[in-house]
Image 1: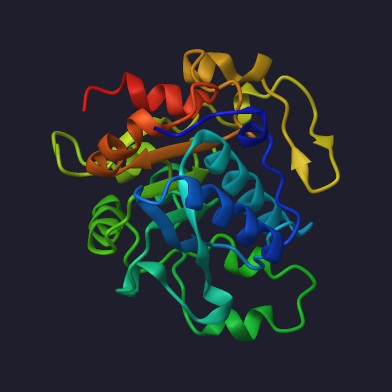
Image 2 (image 1 turned 90 degrees about the vertical axis):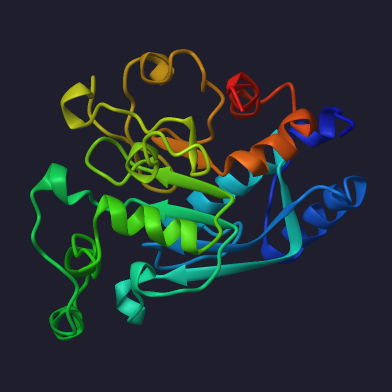
Length: 263
């Protein structure tokens, strides 16, 4: 059984070297638990643990939250940045990934987008001040619920984290109904989008952080008030959750939700 004390609930990752030391210390106390080693981040453009960029900051906060919740991240973790600018399409690859972070990928059915990735995007984006406007709305030719679900299963994914509201790929899009062996939603993607904002964007040190109704409690049924970022969703392999369940922190809302699942 994992031994919980204050320092376990105050993980702060400052850079990659320090993050590996923290992960090594926590894993050493729990040598028999499964670890998340290969981490694919789909739609990210920079990945520096402790970095100030938007993608880096989101990944860092998620890693901190997972460690605080009792999930094991291997000290030899591998961060795999996957984006169209680098000529990579996650849905067309076959690499394995213990954890997949879907970093704000539009859902075509919500935005009614027909744009797909093509080599011409690189030509259009060359010299542009904001390459996000070219690559951000682009969707893989393999983009579909089935495409995502099949790819995650093929990758052997233990844990999926999504970022975004109703207009982005979320946990509910990645789960196959009535498939007891497939991914299970642990915390759902928020179901409300722009129309439910109650105030203007508030600028923080990283990016625009949207304040919504109090703590998004109405979104998560009071189940996720300690999330490090708004708009996070979590889904996981049920066998992985069964193995981890009794070792997770009693102080984490994510962990408490795992215990509520009928696995």
